Amino acid sequence: MTIVRQIYKRLFRLYAHIYCAHSDRIRSIGASAHLNTTFKHLYLFIREFDLVSKQEMQPLQKLIDKFTNDQLEAQGGAAAGSGAH
Image (cartoon, rainbow, N blue to C red; front, top):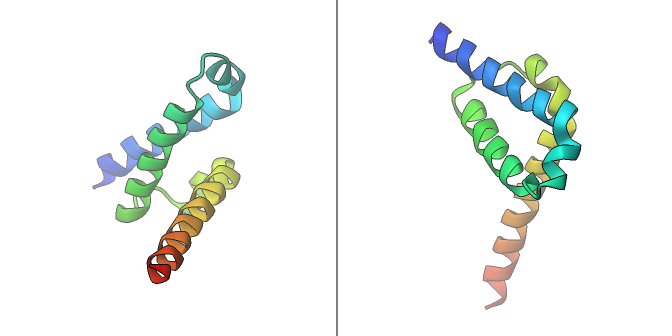
């Protein structure tokens, strides 16, 4: 488990580097949605299995908050929509 945690911590740091240093280039080639999707999947997996500490995830906390808020809104909208039919 120690090795798995180390791998996921490094993957997370790779995404942090991409977002911090290369976001303009990612947007210019139209790959923002792809990057966001893969990061969101990585984050959810990390969270599910508690692989990276919250302290390690701090550099991308605003992005994580956006993803989790969007997910909560989507779930809330789906629940509200299902009651209307």
